[in-house]
Length: 268
Ligand code: NAD
Image (cartoon, rainbow, N blue to C red; front, top):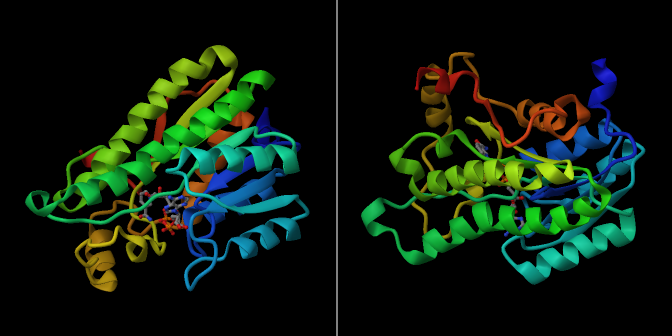
């Protein structure tokens, strides 16, 4: 009962897509470390102007936890297999998986090509599937575990500028339900967070060939007017929900998607 149930003391977490310096994944990794977990972080892009996986790992260590940083592509089964092998080798197990890696981007429906569709589905949906499967194989042996998927409110409504992205994220919401059902007999829970608009660098990380993201300042100004709580979200707004879902505080919650969007979807 109480705050203690939010503790991740003694647990090992793996967070995908955690190199982005202003990203949700990095913030989740640090929140989990702060709550007591040892944390492995991975990303396709480990170092660059927007990325630094080693820095994420260093910040975890500063919180007194063990950290492991790895380069991995969540769309590739071989890469995912060796990712999980390394985490088990170095940190002993995986108690918590956060499927955070994601990309966005937009092309008008009639101009979209397979390439765009394939890339978005591969990272946002297949990546979740491959990592969840690898994690579940480890968790089943231990008869416990928690999987947290990062979906999006774009997966709950149609927005023309989020066409394929929205479809991939609705797949994540459905995958979460299926995982919740499939893994419940093994005492493994699977849930998702569906963020609204969060201030990160994701518009810079869109699929090659996407049309340009709208002017960020003007876009945010217009977006705020539609957010009942009157502000754009912060990565910590999502990390706090992910912490609840990863911890025993949500022990009776599975297959669910929790919306964290400042109230945008209450009017849907
Ligand atoms: P971000 O671009 O800052 O972080 C995403 C990370 O995923 C990046 O570090 C990127 O390198 C990594 N990644 C991309 N392809 C990968 C691959 N194949 N293998 C491993 N890593 C890969 O974006 P963010 O805003 O922090 O997004 C995090 C998650 O939250 C995503 O799933 C995104 O769809 C979701 N989300 C974000 C928002 C928002 O407004 N920012 C809203 C809803 C949902």
